[in-house]
Image: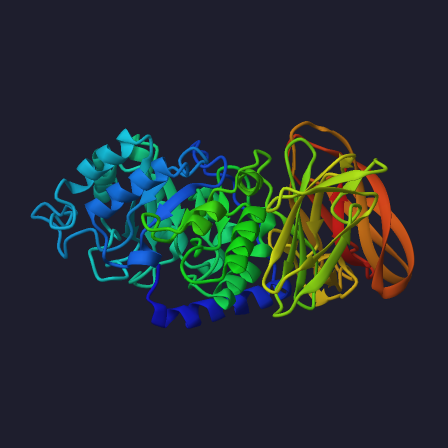
Length: 520
């Protein structure tokens, strides 16, 4: 959470950073935190967007009751999170945080005990600065003392904000609280709310269970769309235990039902946390029906833990594909525009192969259809059609060359490419050892031989040299006739169990441009 008057500046800084990502080297994702929490994206409630500082023990208890009685708990919603303004303006004589006993007469421990009786978990808010965004005592310099309080009170989740941070590096401040939480011995899920600053996705996985990639969301379509655009390219950083967080759900807070369904579809497709920011106690039946769509929740909570990637994006028409455990693929057709449009892709483009017919299940209507290749729908303005595609086999991991988790070094640069997957490619690879692309975070459960399908662009003859996990180079002499339309080649490589990297380079001459790599 950050004061709204800062939101435009923060969002602008995030977008500028994203725009420049192709001009500088990008570090690989950090190793996972490993605290055993958030193996799927966390689900729950946070009071800030609907109530601001008007939080209270009674509100939290009523919300816990509603999550249970409405069936939301059975659908996976488990965290009831208190945001800012729960505490007193000063610490006690021993330097401890003090709950505002007017708002929380039973204290945080009493509130946590009630939430726990419902089979739910309690979240709390603090700040990695000298004061919270609303001006209450922050935890900077008090990390262990405050972590001990949270653990003693029975807190299960900490949202850690970024206001009044005195200019200390975010990774330093957030790591201090990570270590303090670990020393308490209590499992406390750690949410990093640093608004996407300092490229948190590059180091967040080793520090927290989720990290905000954006500024604060607002209850309107343009804000939701902005956060979607910032988050969607960061898929390579998401994995069980650590998730990209484009902020809370605004479903029920003023967008249209169509827009609400789009947000829920897109957040689920991006394996984002599903934290409701609305008044659940007074929520309409429409709002609750969206939040409890089991088929869409299953996409978000899929055990494979992959964030969906953009297959294509042009003219405000987006296609995302998310591989699922068991071989299905969730496909989102999202229309950003203000009039109805037909959005189309193919089973091959989403990584499906090997069958004469595939089943498409519309996860909002429940309707089932079949196709031999085309996946297409008429999508209303600001709407999303979400399909689960079954049949055949999935062709494995598909990683865009320009993905934020990759290392794009030296003169190698991201460029627009309308015919390319995701609408971009990476060019100026090679002609020197410093100019290369490394595809990071290729995860395999077992070691063995894999086939790489490489989409590249080239007019003439050039070579890629590829190196798997820093090993011996494999030369790929290639030919092509276009710098605007990709073609494919394949090569067999050996990958290790766990995380792998594949470097594309040419130390003595220019290489082709690189579009996307698929691992089968």
